[in-house]
Length: 167
Ligand SMILES: CC(C)(COP(=O)(O)OP(=O)(O)OC[C@H]1O[C@@H](n2cnc3c(N)ncnc32)[C@H](O)[C@@H]1OP(=O)(O)O)[C@@H](O)C(=O)NCCC(=O)NCCS
Image (tube, rainbow, N blue to C red):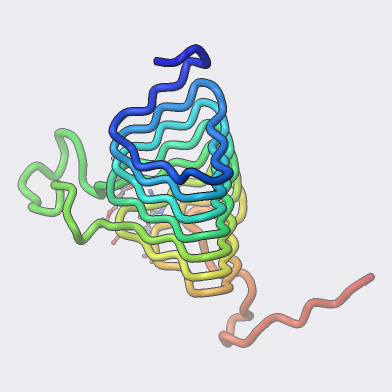
């Protein structure tokens, strides 16, 4: 642990413009240039692309890949196993495996306090509202939120909603 309370163990960290705030724990991860990692985040076995902002109190475990220019707001939890603990012991999917890799695209925002299921793909430019439970893939540029998160930028016919201003 360094004098700022940070633990950085076996990581590859970009040499340009990376800020790692106090009390961050990084283990076996790749952090590319331009990233900001705010305090009390725990990141292990993850790959973080260029210019990604990870706000405070994030949990980003193994099998998570985040592409460039994405923002992860405070308190987001990524999971990397769907069937856990004493339950589901007989299911082979209990193990962390390649099937459960979660990929977050470029220019995505994930709102504060959201939970992202294992093996989810979140497309480029998508927006996940605060407090969402994301159980299915999110299409590029989609807006999703809620528990479970549902697409909010399309009407019931699947057409883009007309957004009216000032009424
Ligand atoms: C609850 C759980 C076991 C259900 O798994 P499952 O039976 O395979 O369920 P499915 O993925 O087929 O989803 C079935 C429905 O429940 C919804 N759903 C699943 N998990 C949900 C959750 N945690 N909260 C809200 N809705 C949930 C799905 O959106 C889907 O809804 P739909 O039928 O309207 O489309 C799993 O989603 C879960 O929460 N696992 C725990 C993960 C975890 O905490 N890991 C920590 C270790 S890293």
